[in-house]
Length: 326
Image (cartoon, rainbow, N blue to C red; front, top):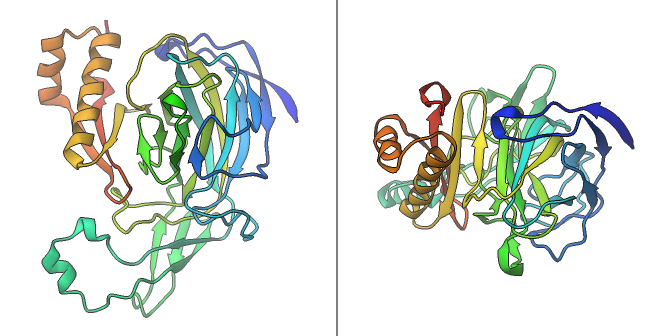
């Protein structure tokens, strides 16, 4: 179903969006476990269009509780972005992200990557358990009611996010939806949610945008190997910045600009994020090479997005109030 919607140009990103654009409603039937240009487009989307769609959980269970795909991280899409060419920057603004069923699941043990060997050896309870949480969307909370895990249970506020957003990688590669990289992918960053704008480098004609792995909430680092895994209702708007080079995913929200670097070891992910942030400051904010380095030395902030995936992800960020304006 297509309906006209007014789209305002995003001046801060240098995007000239069309005055009139479409709202496209898409209910996925097929899901993919790789990022690849070999998958047939599920939907053609023009720059400025808004897409209203759904994602299933990381194990392939949908919004009705039915198993409809296999894991890991089956993806909705791909969305073919008309006019997107290699060397462009795809801009995805997440307008709405909400859980759409009353349950989620999680792991219950911290990943071995996150602990000292002595802490792992000292564990009394070593059994991996899949836990079921109840989502109360009206109250905005998720509750675990299992006395064998924690007497009295626990209730946590919802913070919906997408663990996976990515495009087709370069050179015709097909890469697992478990893996993050320069194409985006399974970055598992808590900041990829409603109100955030994600920017991904286009590697193939049409970009081929995929998304999935919704979490009702997640601790930073995904240290237990999962968030609260569930299905999602998603609304996003796409735009393009033509001939805009970027080596790594960029993210912007009301308070920060950010770069997400992914690699192993963790230090390499840190280096990717830091290097790309320096380039961004020089290209768009008027900093000299030495000026950007001096500024970052006193203003840069960092978060660890994940330490459990095939590549780890580090976020380098700058608070917007500290940026100079060229």
